[in-house]
Picture 1: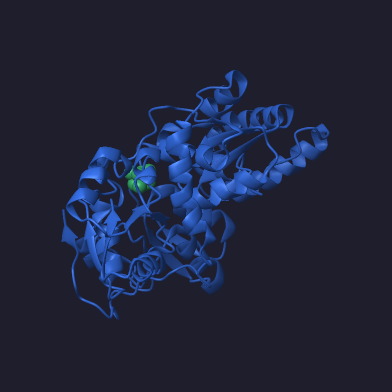
Picture 2: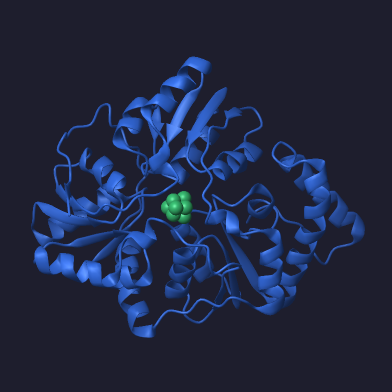
Length: 361
Ligand code: SF4
């Protein structure tokens, strides 16, 4: 459960809880912003209690959303799984549209709301269900592994989903289960290329890219090293492989967060979306964060104001055709049923065992 406060408590309880939240957020929120945000946080938390609703807040939400109103926080799949276990009637997805679809797929009986219907994703938009059907015709007999950052239509055409935390494990499982040495892995070109370096399985992929992570370059890493020679640099595997080769650690959002919380580096750089570092920094006061981030314009469409409006008006509901949802659920469930990695996967491209690149469709 993220830090919130008891909406039904006394003014004093609320004030002391809000004071605790302010202590946590003051590194990334200004006092002027806080004066506007605090009443909205109070209003949202009261609405959640009144309507039996939960807010799922992705790692890329701004800190006042992530720490102020998020009941479950983390990556998209973790959020949907937590939501499925809760008895809430309404889910507000503080994230982008494909995440709301995943929540609906896993929680078909709950009302799933997204505060802004325009919150999309360059990666999810790069491929459609009909594209996947054509790919399967071109490569018959090969399993299709699909990143969770895709629409329900694309998941429905897939054999199994993966996240950046388990992609290598899922690719190897699919090759073994189908008895083949190649798999189709969609749609992120860079994630596929980074996975290909960690496994003997050959990968056929697609030219989808995350518009946030594709912009980081090796020159950016060199500049950071020169300016902050003692900083430990972490990157997300949606970045290009040459960027991953230049950093100290690469892994999913969960793996990066885990790295900071357990190793407690004195100074760190997170090569990912801006709010990720802000949210981890709020829980890691002894680490100094250098923040050369890129903003995701889609994630930033979500605000305290439109979360409040989503709860008040029960808008905008996200639905998935039941037939599509059932097929997509099978692909997601197959991944969920796999044993979880002991620790979130690390992408070690310097010590990579394999130097075979992907075949791009
Ligand atoms: S950060 Fe990248 S993958 Fe995530 S929603 Fe934004 S564009 Fe999509």
